[in-house]
Image 1 (cartoon, rainbow, N blue to C red):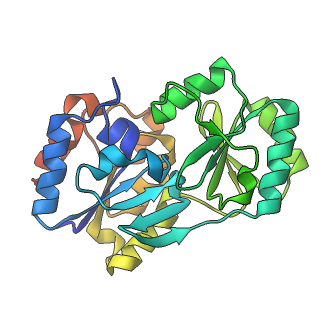
Image 2 (tube, rainbow, N blue to C red; image 1 turned 180 degrees about the vertical axis):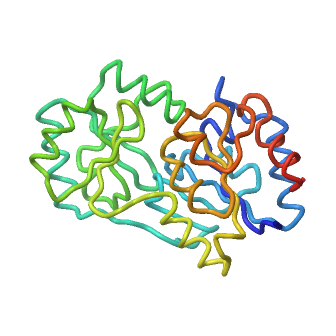
Length: 257
């Protein structure tokens, strides 16, 4: 199969799962794909503002906020804007209980709550070593995704208080707070439509549980060796770890490079 578009998760896929850097082999592989005329898209849990190193690879199409926002160059392809009143209600509820809550615009904000579990989750999911900016009136902006930092027990109080919202776990201490369905695969559909391509012409790479729907949706899904068993079982092919030139290894073994 000749693929016309490739979707790559960022953290733990494009970047090394060991130190968050981008391996030279991955940079060269992405450049080679582009030289072949294959479109390359980053599909990430990051906000767009944290994608400069990925833009430096020559990538100009981004799915961000776990699928809540997609943009090609300067054109917005897809966005899921949350209701301002709902954002404010969840904001107030989390603040009163001192629970961490993050907000995705094109940038990334939190509600000012700090604890070691939140900081560890920020490091594991976004390779952040400090808390993002605090905006007391963040709900006045367009929000594409909220994430709650919480245990299962903590999340239950939100499910009871906000039965019209969905709380979807994708990390042991992070859940998406959804007004409508948000996922990488939904955004991928929008990107494929934008470029006039079919999902059978797409290949995707990922390592996290928020990548599973993406790997299952496209024509061919590649799980990184650093992904857990559930991620790997959802893929058509399992490559080496991202820290072990996994992207290059898969592309060469599959005959794409």
